[in-house]
Length: 133
View 1 (tube, rainbow, N blue to C red):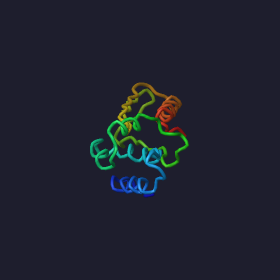
View 2 (tube, rainbow, N blue to C red):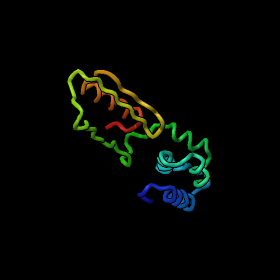
View 3 (cartoon, one colour):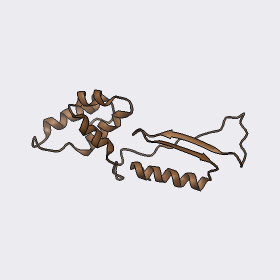
View 4 (cartoon, rainbow, N blue to C red):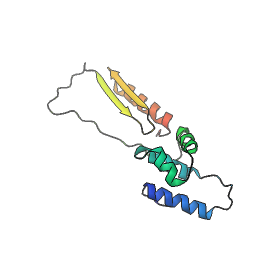
């Protein structure tokens, strides 16, 4: 199957699966479901469902399912956050951190957050989204 995730590559994967499946009643493989869901980051659900020949309800149900922890195709991406050179950082400063996951969940941390609290939070969010280390 294709490795670059584009609508065209996922469509080619769906077409290959449809041509080679042993029975018309075969379920869509989990890797194809995950690829279709991953496209939601950049494309509308309508464009994905029309192109892949799947229903909106199918795509929604796949998106609502947690990603298996054993899936090695998705990995946690570390993003280093640096402070602007002209900003003084003091031990008493409050942290405000906002981020949104590809599935639409929005998280906000605000206040005096220790490194261990931040680590616990990141691990918890990773476990909820199926991306725990």
